[in-house]
Amino acid sequence: MFAGVLPVISGYFVGDRGLSYVGYFYVIFVNFEDNMDAQSEIPVIDIRDLVESRPARIKVAQAIGHACREFGFFYVAQHGVSESLQSRLVDLSKRFFAMDHDQKMQIDMKRGGIAWRGYFPVGGELTSGKPDLKEGIYFGSELDAAHPMVQAGTPLHGANLFPEFIPEFRQVVLDYMDAMTALGHTLMRGISLSLDLDEQYFDRYYTYDPLVLFRIFNYPPQSPDRHTNDVWGVGEHTDYGVLTILKQDDNGGLQIKSKSRWIEAPPVEGTFVCNIGDMLERMTKGIYRSTPHRVRNVSGRARLSFPFFFDPNFSAAVQPIPVLQSISPQDETSHERWDRMNVHTLSGTYGEYLMTKVGRVFPELGKQVLPPDFH
Image (cartoon, rainbow, N blue to C red; front, side):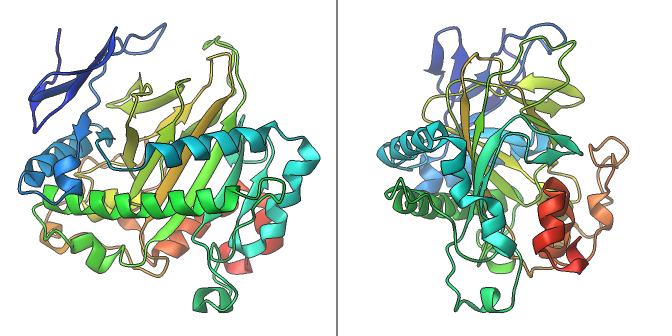
């Protein structure tokens, strides 16, 4: 049984035997337990023509547009990011998280200061005021002390912290961020085309110098009891910027809220999971929706994930796309959002919006290192 099947440039089917090519159709078939929905259709989009700027990239853009309207999530295949680089990143991340607590705390986020970089232990990050069951490392664009944004004391800008006991970690992380930044620009060109905009629209106005943020998270295993265990690897939330590109391991656990129902976003070999954030919802006046998601790791094994955030320039004032100005925000649902916020009434820069969020994720650290205006 197929549901919501859409003709696209190419696609795949995820079923009992994994990922299978089905010509001009795509759909993911997922089985659920308990109160999870019985079926899901999350697109897996072959983006090779977009990556290589072929004429058929228009069809890829149309598939991306459908996914953004229906789910806010999609998978991308044939993305061109080196498998070898990804494997090295995974191996080094496993080595880091296997170290003892004192070694990992050598790059404690407190040492990163206003740059907001470094390691935090399990329970150190909050979502909606509740500790998440994960540990992780925060990275961003590598900027030295002479960079104008660093000189100005701009939050979330500065040098990264890398563990001295894994010297090769630095170059692998920086190479991976470079590859993902390139992929982010490619996908934003596809999103521009999906909205019938000039291909360079987002590059020109918002992501010419994107705010790049990268995380590596390690989720310890949790109880599979959905009814009594209210602890989440990360609780329900939306992402803040325009585009998130996620590499996940094969342990699963990612869930998305699609049309008021929670559905699984299972691992699909050779793909990244992409989702749109609050700022793209604001720009499109809700035509593309920033979709809530959460993680519970019931695999019985540690789960690694690698979210890469491709966001507007820190100083960009995010506004609705001019050709959409006459459209009323779609289906106002601020009362249903996890944070009760209406993204369509925001003003100011992306950096100002972002800082109202990140200070709540690490409230004590925020009080110590962020300027008073951002508390």
